[in-house]
Length: 157
Length: 157
Image (cartoon, rainbow over all chains, first blue to last red; front, side):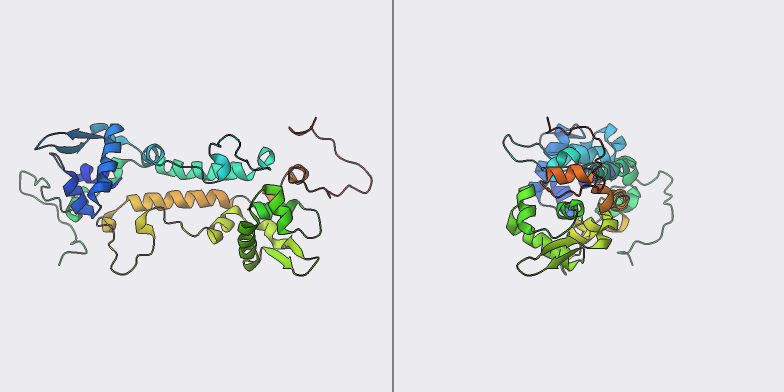
């Protein structure tokens, strides 16, 4: 999610894993696995080579947070009886009549439904502020030289 | 939750950890920790001694599943920035402007709100069927000898 936000507020060009690692203080090793998965899902485009890097696939701005969580989180089995059971593994004896299971499934669905109400693009705001916090310098300056006034952020004097 | 359901459908008298362990196939060691916590929360009453055991505290039928989950699950920090941070530990650099955090908090709240809509008493139904699946034999027979007709369960011939 943080990689997608980083790439969303980067105005143009390619980013490197090193830059994202530095910006968030996330280990490069971990980020490499994340970026590989984002590439396989088609949400991030990678350009190989010396001047290579990453950029957000255009359609990723419309991705919902719910879709991202569903496709990247491995385990939504909040109780044992939701998961796949290996053959011979004992199930829960009350399962045929258990209402609690339905209650927990409804709660999981409510969690994801709330996440479905929001997109990557919407969360990549305020873009200038996020870019500043991430140390992304090349925020485009409007041609007329006009920069909209804003309150100083907490780390500014 | 399963201990509370067991005690809810047990018509009278005291249950032992051994009985509950046998009924669900849950280890006695694990159950002892669970029951201790349920006792400390006042949801279960324990009677010590040779003929001792457990019973549901009367008010526990009105407990919501949400309240149980809130009081017994240790960690609702679904992302690192929700938790308490040890001094000196690095936070997330975009936190001052991050909207995703609010989205994830709203999803967590939607999960718990759904669980708040249901009580232990409501989930301890159908009581006779649950008691039968749990091997609880002493289901009370109405004085007039009338047993309401019902469809045979899946494990009955």
